[in-house]
Length: 167
Image (cartoon, rainbow, N blue to C red; front, side):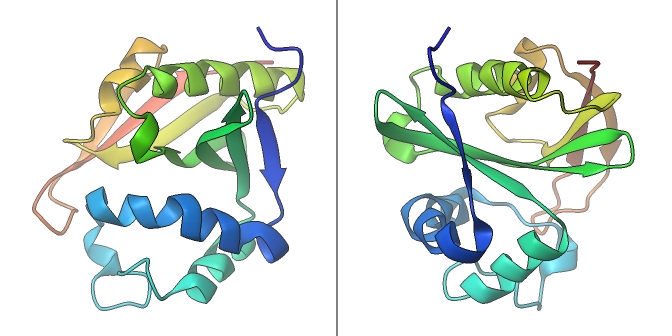
C-alpha cells in the first residue's frame, strides 16, 4: 500500500510529448499491429506524435504515469465506453521489465479506479496472442473472453480479456 497514489494523470495536450519520447517509442519495438493500421499514419509510432495525440484526445483516453519511489516505471491508458472500462495500453519501461511491475501496476490500477469511484461493470483489454503480459492479466483475475482470429499484421490473433468490476 502506498501513502500516495503511484499514478499521475498526464495532460495529453501538454505532456504527451514527454510520454511519447520517454516511454511510447519503446512500444514500437514490440507492437504487433492490427491489420487496420497498415498504410495509415498510425502504423508507425515514431514521427507521428500529432496523429497519436489526436487519437487519444478524440477517444478520450486517460493516460496515467506509474511512478514508484520517484522512478518512472511505466504507464497505463484507459477510456470509458458505456459500462466498460477499456485498458487501451499498458507498458512497463524496458529497463524495469522482469521485476513484477506489470502485475503490481494492474493491481494498483484496480485499487485506483475503485478509490476514484470510476463506475463500470467490466474492465476489458485487447492484446496480441504472444504478448508477454497475457499471463499478468490472467494472474490478476481477467478471463480470456474471446479471440479475434488473424487480425494482426503477422497473422496473430487478438485476445480479449475481461474482468467483472464494481467499485
